[in-house]
Image: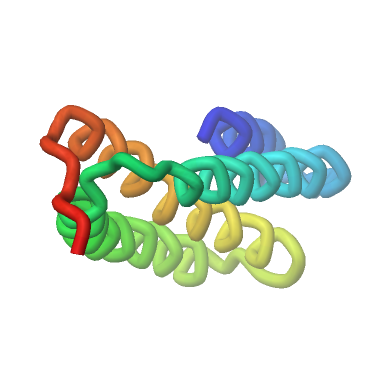
Length: 117
């Protein structure tokens, strides 16, 4: 999440001038690698309250998808186009997935482990 924040601050610091996209692309790639790594590590947990995790994840994903959608609409309505829009929307997608994963993990780790089927 910190990489998405850093990338957003870097881009915002250049507005309304032209933004050099090398740093935001690198930061976006690092954020994506960390998100995928977190999901892979999380998926390897054996004794974990997966039912609670997915229940919390669904609702928080819905909430953050709405938030990211509204922010994305503002970018489009403001006239952001091209590569910059792709980078910003990609950062929003990582934001909309990362926060629900972290929040769901934080809730499920303190719950009783699901009974084996």
